[in-house]
Structures are given as structure tokens and as C-alpha cells.
Length: 192
Image (cartoon, rainbow, N blue to C red; front, side):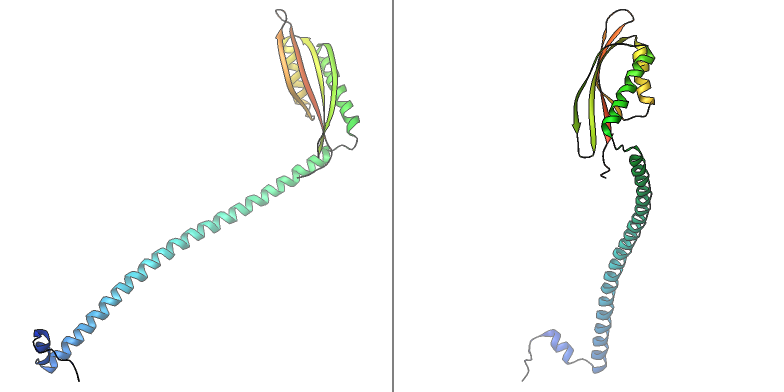
């Protein structure tokens, strides 16, 4: 048995209308519902399509960036290999002999520039994992241009010499007194 509401105007209208009109209204309702559902599905598909298109553009850009970075990395690896070979070229087996040669080079540079050497002394050697460093203290007197020429000569020599600490004091009109620590560095092994 079916529940049939007796005082419902909508039911009464549908129940007593023409059969042809009833099928036409039901078909119209089904078609409208189909178009409404397909519209919202199409909107949903369009939104996801746009999101996927943006993600595809982003991924292509990342791929281009990654390939560019890979090319740069290859170039950098070539540069690193060049630097490694250059460092291996400068590696010295006998560090103490090399440090003595560097000290003699600095003393000859002082003599060549005509600076007055007041005192010098070699301090304790420092050993690292990949290098040996020895420090020498120099006390020299000369003109400002002579002192700058001394620094310039050390720079142009392209040796592993570092001027770590220095102080300059004016003695007379054209005479300056300089105390400096010069470090001699020797590479023992290549660890990159």
C-alpha cells in the first residue's frame, strides 16, 4: 500500500494532469538536471585543467633550471679539477726546505729594496691536516715607498706567503719602522 497524501496540491495537480504533459515535465526536469550536472562537472574539469596546466608550466621551468644547473655543475667540476691539478702542482714534498727557501726569498727582498733589517725571528711551526705553516717576525726600517714596494714584491711573487700582522710607526720625516709577521704555508696533501 502506498502513502497518498490527500490534501497536497502539488500531488493533486500531478496526479490529475494529462499523461503527455506529465512525461514532458518529467523529461524537462531530467534534461535540466543533466545539463546542470554537466555544467558543474565541466566547471570542475576546467578548474583542474587550469591547475594542471599551471603545474605543468612550473615543472617545465624547474626542469629547465635543473638542466641549466647541471650544466653549471659540470663547468664547476672542470674548474675544480683544474684547481686540484694546480694545487697538486704546488704541493711540496720537503716542507722544511721549502720554508727555508721562502725565508731566504723574504730576506733577499728586504735586501733588494734596501730596507734596514733590525731583527727577525722564526716562530714555532704549525701543522694542520693538509698544510704546514711557519711564522717569522721581521722588524725593518725604511721609507714608506720602500715598505710598500716590499709588500708589492711579496704580492707579485705569487708564493704561499701571507703577511698576517703588521704595525707601522713614523720615526722621522721620511723614515718608518715596521714590525710584521710573515707566514710561510706549505701544502702537505690535497683534501677537497
